[in-house]
Length: 130
Image (cartoon, rainbow, N blue to C red; front, side, top):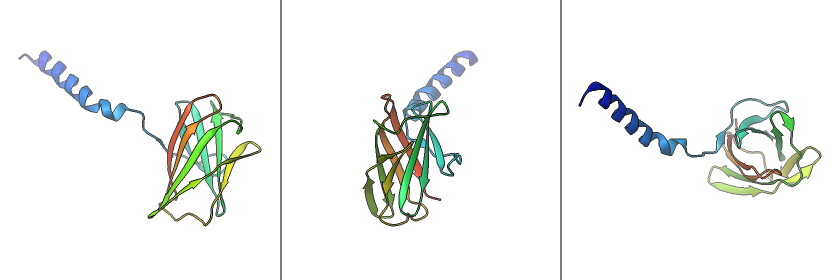
């Protein structure tokens, strides 16, 4: 086998092995947003900003940097705080979605977003409480 053939075979094998890694995974929280929360890019161009307060969780959505209406979104929040798993219902409050927390979340708790925006794009994001 010549060197070029070996390179092509190696590249093909690397691509085949990496394809599961290219499957859609939840966006991971990255930066601090304008409301002080963690942000993640979801559905390729939507931004989700999650603000965690002691008594509630607040979600702001935007599309290419422009605020997205909070109405008509079907987004579910699931919280894994140690062994405790909780679903938090979100309701529209002005330009954002918010849901009550029974108690403040512990550092390291995982917050998962899943659902669809009003324009039908899928939302999947994972945040870790800092």
